[in-house]
Image (cartoon, rainbow, N blue to C red; front, side):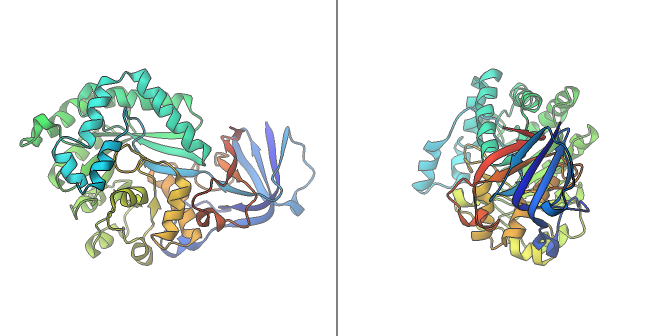
Length: 411
């Protein structure tokens, strides 16, 4: 089937020579075409250009985008959307002065979600996650990474990953799965967490690999969670089974997580609220994408990751939602785009690259999605009439998306 989207006011995020990621000064470069057309064939981008250069062609479907802007779908490279309960009571605890670390120490936080997950059926978890996927799709997300981590036992972790597999099979969104058995330390392993690390390595990872349930392996390497040595052991085990590392690092403290991530060629290191010169220097020249989670820093009132300093040092930067019930209960990537500009001082061009192409890289799919390029999946959205693409981060409380296309089909 051939579809044309015509009379586009401005087609944004175009690439004639596709890149896998943008870094440093490249992040300020955003290709656009005004008064444009976009041709889709068999679910992929066939061609694009200015309307005046569109020759005689026949199409099965025509979409008129007069007065509207077309952008590549957001890619959200860090989420935890398979979970069983919300945690608004902990939200109130935070308002009253308890820190995230204090809540976790008394059995709240991740452990709270783990209890509810253990009690929920696979079908219940699937239905709840499907609603969240539908929600983020409606506001412009076209690719998403989903982590386990609210199981913290072999059977519960497998249950979560099987739900993610079902979502992969049934949703039009591009999905990558991440095994995060090392998300928290169960209460019964407190004081001897090395035994839990052994469980992750010797039992969970082989079972996950046997069913082919995970693209990535992840560890929460931070103060009060898993040490650098724990992390190295887990990553080495995952790599042996074909899972590429990703890391939760430096949310609570400078933990060494960035360094261990780079050492093991992690595709991304995420959070990074605590970053020093050594961490920035370590990332230079690596294949690892530093990924900032503005929603988490906002919700927990954490320090802001030094995004500007990282870009000025020549690094790439990605920004994802961290959609989860405890520390970032929103998957709204339009809001993340706005936060990138308002709180982290990225330009609109840098922010759009950080939430599309660079997040696609951080989940290993930038060859397929993340920009408007010939041969990539036709994942894009058409905005309501807006004055310019700069309006996207500017109007932070408004849903600017009017129509959604994934794999060339409208949803």
